[in-house]
Image (cartoon, rainbow, N blue to C red; front, side, top):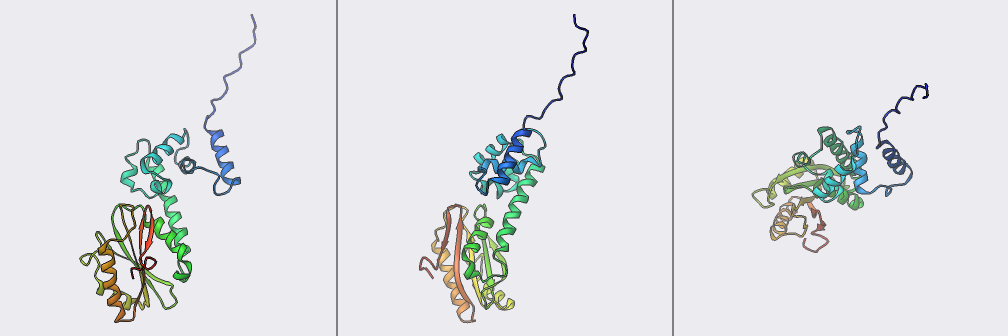
Length: 235
């Protein structure tokens, strides 16, 4: 019978540490497409969940909200309904969404909007495509087509009860704007314009014509893409 003292048991290892290290290495070395969408969510959740496997939660979020952008733009109340998502994890998702918005907005501010059209569309899509309420915004531009004010005009159905053509133009005069771009979203996801969308645009164009403010476009944003009324020949 041996008198040797048995070796103490090895310290427990966190089984997810290696996976996290490998994911980090792929992120840092593999370029923008190195990670799948669920892996992006996994990584975002690492900081809020020090231990454990975040992959099941990441995949659960994608299944619930349909896409990475759907997760990041989901309302906090909806996210809290996903079992296993803590407030710390919720904060990690929301700060990522905020960073994306700020980055997109920085590509629009202080640049001629008409010359940075794709950057504008990207910004609007990030900010509005996944909203569950219809929101109307008016982008007021100066004589060099730089953004003066991004104004939230209303929430709800776009008609004259929600957005008043004279008020839109009056605000433009107060700001010294030379032109405007109307923007709103369709929560249904389909960005095709309705008859009301076209009619209210025509009324705002008419109101602006008499006071020297041009309506460059009306852009409708949805999860399925965007539509420019000018590109469709509707204004």
